[in-house]
Length: 163
Image (cartoon, rainbow, N blue to C red; front, side, top):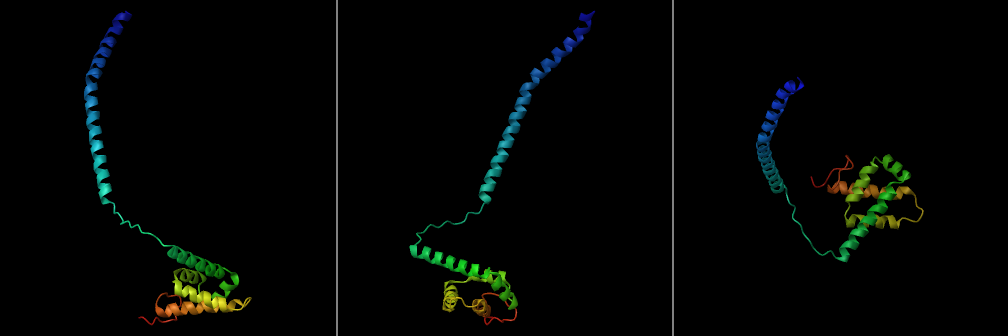
């Protein structure tokens, strides 16, 4: 009796097995076709991405020692003045004069060589141990002059002569 009950199950399993074996080549073909489509679209996407990138022109040139030294001096001058503006007593004086210390630091960072040289020269002329007011006054004067020239807009009460 057990054999008669298992016979239909065995026939069903052999039919399913044959169907699966016959379907494998079609499944493989479908996977290959899908793989080709995916590969093709990835290629298109890669080409599009490459072509849409903007390439900046590259320039290579020799840099002279003098240019490097000048840049280093500029950086040192800016760092010296900025560290001086970080002091609490100088910041208090700047606030008292209506100057934002952050704006003053930004302006010092934007100064060119001539302005930095003038500011350093005025700072060097101050006697050793002089009060902070002289330093602040020098920074204030430089900021007013650059406001008048239109290079900055730190003080709203200073009108630019270039307008």
